[in-house]
Amino acid sequence: MINAVGNRMTREIARQAKLADALERTQIQISSGKRLQRMSDDPVAARRILTIGTTQASMASWQANIKSAEAQVAQAAGVLGSTSDLLARARELTLSAANDTMSPADRATVAAEINAIADEIDGLAATRDSNGEPLFAAGSARVVRFDSDVSFAPVQSAAAAFVVGGNALSTSLRDAATAVAAGDRTGMDASLTSIAGAVAHIADQNAALGLAAGRLERIGDGLSARGIAIADERQSVEEVDLQTAIAQLNAQDLTLSAAQAAFAKINRQTLFDLLT
Image (cartoon, rainbow, N blue to C red):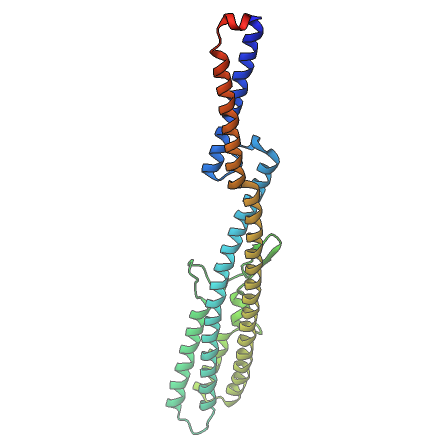
């Protein structure tokens, strides 16, 4: 009889310990706002949370790439805009020098300005971005990842932007300056054709930057929408429902209190009471 009573007490103590543990877990969930405190609480949900976390980290990296690329595209568009303005000025100067009434001294002055424009365009081609890297890559254009399966070069290479028909824009301008200084009308006419082609080329390159900017914006919007959906899913899996948790806490507290009260009442009985 005594052994049976002892066994019942041991089982009751163990049951109350489990109730206390469950109560404590619920309290921690409410205070932390997290439903899972360790992977063993729900292995499937814990694995899903880890997967979502990895995806969110990747998406944050892609969003950062998009912001950086957007800044580079805007900077490159400004550079090409300046280049276009300089080419237009070089064209005006070459046209004016083609006038037979211009003196050799005036042509020399015009040639010097065209050479200065060529130097300035070389400087624009060597522009660096905010990270100190060449804005227009010297080799192949830099390809950047913007999503799990989306990678492309937002800014073209220096060769693509500043070379036409195998000749650098600055080289064509220096050829024009040479023709102007020498009063070479044929050379000046050829240079005017080259400069017109360069202006059209820069316009095409600027249009390509505009397309890249639009694509980056669409990708960024898509990532933002997916980010909200993934964050909502993670919240539903990871975070605790406070109303439900509080109700559960009250029920657990009531159950434990009742069990403790009953246990205390039983233990007030004497050994004689238990034996009779």
